[in-house]
Image (cartoon, rainbow, N blue to C red; front, side, top):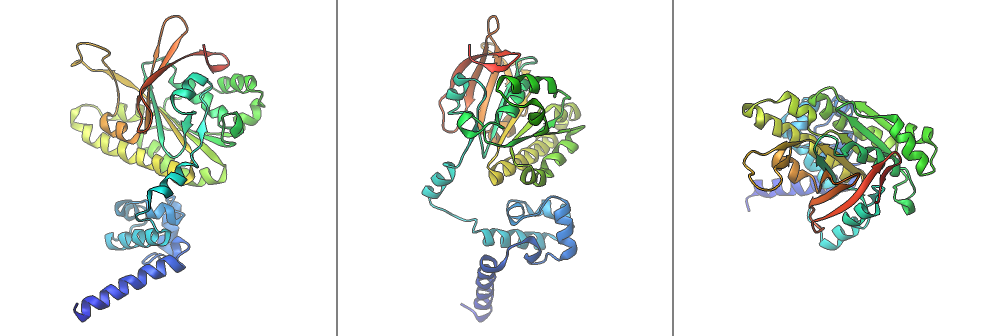
Length: 333
């Protein structure tokens, strides 16, 4: 090994050791001065974890950093947090910390192994009036229950892109569960998303309120409505999918870093190429499909019955559950 290469290797090893031993905040990252740190904090990058899971492009945009500086800061944050390979038993231990939010139906909870799980995105899709928003009302209340009753002792953050939030539904569900309706309402933090950029910004800026307000459930109702309205025609499809992918990754980071659940609703379309069977397909294609760990298709059945069909999960078999929606929320038949 040449003297120059040996010196570079020694320097790199020294930087890694220093990162692991000394770096405790973003102001200590290489290349991040006071001014850059203030810009990063203002953009929502307040912790080493948020820097470590960001991309260079995101930091460049947030704090006007150069590409090399952004990459160095990210690498240093990852070194400090020791974000590299780990053994499978550690992953198993981390998964033991996963919590679940009850849907209000024992049948549905059994179908999805206990409820809406933390550390990932759960997607429910279906036609208009299929009951998607009712799932949001129900879980926004049940997340506030103690763990032994199907909750997470936490609060809810709700991004509303369709102006569909109705406090009276929260009140009726809370009363049924024996909770104080006014306290329940005060524990739900709502923001109206006026367009796709605003919706993305709300998710990117959610880190602070998540920690301050003990948020354990993030609801996005609807995930795709604003994107679908703004990006019309095949010529804009690539741009739409790119933005949607970025948005969902921001939600995934929030779920993983804060051990919270994310529930998103999705619209559907009718596929003209399906001649036999149900032509209903969720909006967003593979981008939404890959980023949603659990996917449920909601549809009406006969009389007042509803069907929740589990169509995709990395660990659960496909299946269906029957339930109904009443003034008291989601219930078993």
